[in-house]
Length: 157
Image (cartoon, rainbow, N blue to C red; front, side, top):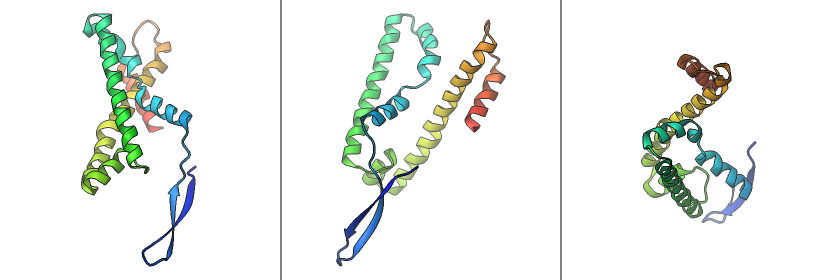
């Protein structure tokens, strides 16, 4: 449920204007939970054996994961700085809107939705369906059609 708070301000003519804004109610625990949910992807549970097989050594695999973690840390710091500069709801859309205007912000919003969020949720549902079906196929990999059907059902619900 959304929490809103009313705020009053005056315009140039001295009239009182009442605006409704989202209530700022995030604390350290909620912020940490959001960051873990956003950056702690399911890919480590699915891709780790594939990455290890192609990298050739455990050391190189760990270096690759550390570099990826460092890149995520830098991205989190950039978003932290931007959220301090623009304390509004909306994420990257808000930042691009304030800097470049409405058209680039619109393109970023839809690009994120179609090219980032869509594949991410498909990947998460695929990984979840692999883990759900694995106990039913203990000696082999689950059939791909079963994984895709269950993944599609997870996405739909």
